[in-house]
Length: 153
Image (cartoon, one colour):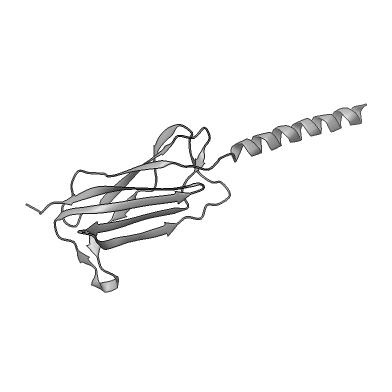
């Protein structure tokens, strides 16, 4: 009788732990949408441009954060800077909560330079377009925003 009670208690405790563990790792596919903006309305030459990405998850479940984030800066249809970053999550995959709009972290940064290697130069004042994209489990989303670089007074 005591052995049966101990066995039943062990089964119940195991079921509780397993249920809790599974509930911690529940998420599903997107899609999600993004809205891209800059941290400030304009920048002076040489200032680091910080992009803010707001991710909206309309799903009934958490959606994983992206495994790819990219941005490209262009002016007059010519790509000047940017690239993609692939993200490798550890055992815990961060998620965007259901029915939420969440800022994506870490922010994307641009140093206002173009070129490669030792040939990097400061871009001229003017308006630039940032094309930002993220890709994750069940989604690829993109948006663009304008970057205004003003002349130093």
